[in-house]
Image (cartoon, rainbow, N blue to C red; front, top):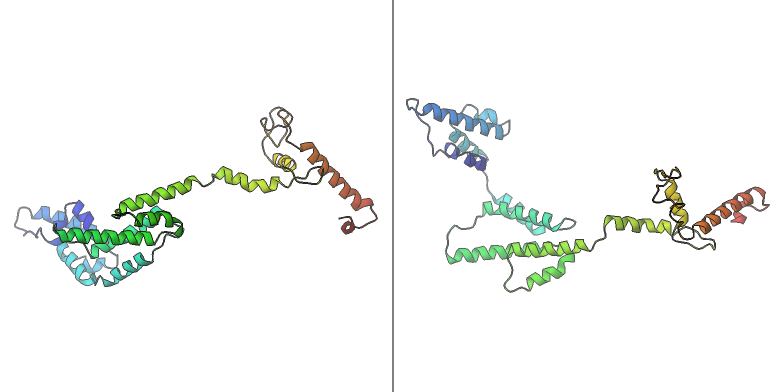
Length: 276
């Protein structure tokens, strides 16, 4: 809310630096109009249960002071929660960017309760460097063990890099890891390979998958534009291009096995279990 009031250049009505004008003043109407506008912003921002308690106050500065006196409390519980979150935050399954953003949001919120001094002496630079090093250690401690190598390289640097530089190095290491991961198409092919390896050949062994390739074509919804056969397109047509290795042997082996099974089940004097 303070950011919104400051952006609108109306914070003077909130903190009381622009005092209320008397009705005899020529600028009273303009002041009243702006005060009521800022008051409407404030009423729309607070909880609806609180609105009736401040609805009839004339000055926005009086409302702001009343809300501050009622709801301002000690910052110790908030500081405790933030410190505990920072100490226990781990990357786990998150990306480096998501983990760092969560950690930085806690640091920024904690800085509002314990801001750095505004002086420009040497002590300020020492304290700022100490805070920067502390945040760097917290960031490195929460990384997964897979980043142990880049973490060791950062810790061996003398002097230690800034937090932004360390984050950039870890991010580059993560990008290098992603380059070595298989693509989606490659992963799909690897997952499909075991089913293709199960196609039988004429000698009973397994081939690269001609029979399963036939079945996969038959399940396709494409239609060959030359033979008008459903199950494949013109580029994958075996008759127009070429048959895969062991295609006919696999088909003969499959047909022989199927017919033998059917014949044995109908005419053989032995049972199905004995035949198997």
